[in-house]
Length: 81
Image (cartoon, rainbow, N blue to C red; front, side):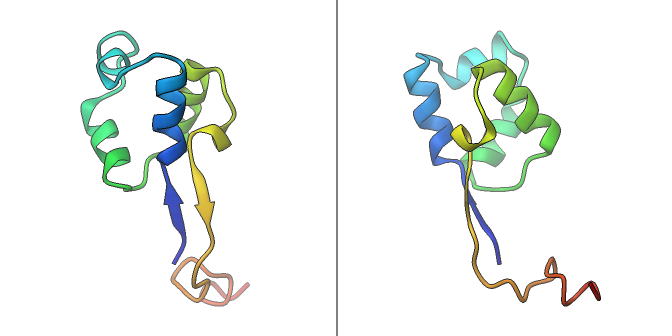
């Protein structure tokens, strides 16, 4: 299992003096997308790209990746690689 944390996203929002309201109303980020982030659920790379553009930052300022058990369904062993 791989774990992605969106904690840096909220720190970055605070540093930029932005609120979720701003993302929804001024930048047209859907409230469902913000809900998915808040719940730690996956978002698309397109969404990551959009957030990086809005916040003028690198993806590492939005997410943290923590490798876990690599024997899950996404592992190269399961895909025959």
